[in-house]
Length: 478
Image (cartoon, rainbow, N blue to C red; front, side, top):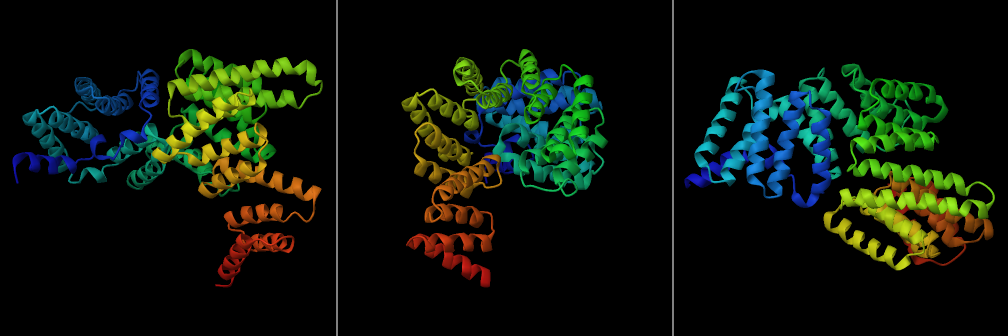
């Protein structure tokens, strides 16, 4: 083998951003850059965390083709790690040295490349272990997956779990695992059985000063309504009092107050968070959701004529913040889908339809959040176009793809509402019972599905229902 091939084999064995399968097409680079820039501001006094962020920033710069900026960010990371550990061969430097070996390879600085390879080898030898068995390395990998794309959240969860097996008392690893669970676990549990709540409590024990974790726990507790409102309210009040200017605390607290129905307080906090991070797509999106809740509250009040202009003012705010969210994160599929729906509400049907077709294409190409687009398109068809059959079709597609997601749960509710409305009008509506059967089938509730499909068949001849019913009966008796 020639020298270049041997070098490449060694590089491929490293644990660093260049070998973690961070695919450019999976990433919304402007959004990632905004998040990393925000993190640099937040962690200005935490050198080790800053070093990790500069590592991630370097790889984004590499993906953008800025090799010199990549190198500069990595050298900053090295300096920060050395200020923390005062040694050249500390295990915290494994990832940074690996990245430096790779960037020097791409810049054809082969002597420098080999020098950094040797540094990684020396660290591994000093600790008598491979890089993949070092909790600091696995943890940095987990944080990278969390920061780069929602498509990597499951991989992040696996990394933090593995790292905690090696270092169970580590505060950062416990926090990372808690956040990964918060972002991936949607199933309904009792408070006692919720893995997310258990891990958030554990993370707070090991990070008593982390006020973001407290608000995340409060948001999860608020799902259990009045049972846990007192504890949730107390956690949020404490977090805001301790960290009144932390944008993440303000953003999550804004989300919490929206859940609690205190929309104006949520809007006030989120508006304050925007002063700190005006380019935050997530904060703009949360503001749009608060104004959506405010719009719903207003529509539920009386005197339609008096409220119509106010509803339009609120709708303008929703559209403004959704447009800002999608400007700063061009691949923010949820925000784009919601924006298209609101254009539909404004009777801009062709514009909405064009946007939906564009986002369907993007979601399919990226294999990302297709179920979300189906949900919003179903809402668009039902409430803007009044085409119930198309709404049913797309609610079903959402449910088939990701039934446990918030959009999947909303799709199930939408389908039930349509079905029962039809049954109320006509107790012998076979298609309505077919819809209910579909929901039970997707949820794995086979006996209930059989009962509904039997009713559907009794009120009309449908070969598709018969096929499904036979398959269900067969699976039950196996």
